[in-house]
Image (cartoon, rainbow, N blue to C red; front, side):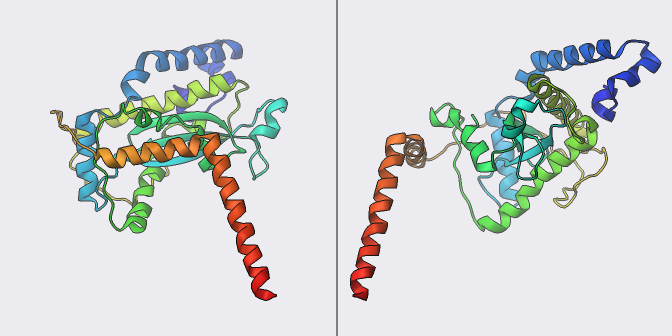
Length: 285
């Protein structure tokens, strides 16, 4: 826990635990794997209908009806990135980066986490590789009716939820605030997921205590503190979505992912550009 919370190195544990550095690292790896195996189904699960009802009610109260959560990516510098992967993981900043994609709600609870993609990708490429919308494409997600109003202005306010979530996550777990010193991508993934699971545990534990505190969207902490949590309804409530909009989304999604459709669109675009160029040349003549 000290290695997670304070970011201390393994050999510091020798002073008070009287164990070797290699033993401390082995124990640390076992701990992160155990946290993932035992708790990931509870603290990294899909929102239930009751959760969705609570999130949608709060979104409507904040002026953005239909908004469930905020999506963003966090870049974690990989100091000990293996040389054979350095080119793939090096970002435009010139340093190896490993990316976390996450979705957080207004209470900083992280509902979705996708970790391990190379820093050479941008956020759009990450979204294309992410399994975030896979369940929706096969019709397995809870039914939700989506609405928007004053989109740009309200989206800017909602993005602060993700900034707050990343800020609290880094403030609580110093190990992800600095460069990653691990050699294995698998171990780094367990470390990141352990920090997220423990973060959600803290959010759940402080929910009742902080339910009455006022919400401040500009509050991005720089040190460990309590997150603003609102009480979760106990009864499940069905939330419905528009089947026509869902079918339209699925059709467009499949067309975007289909190589044949991409090729046809590319050919059509090229033909259209050539036609416009020929017409322009004829007009000049």
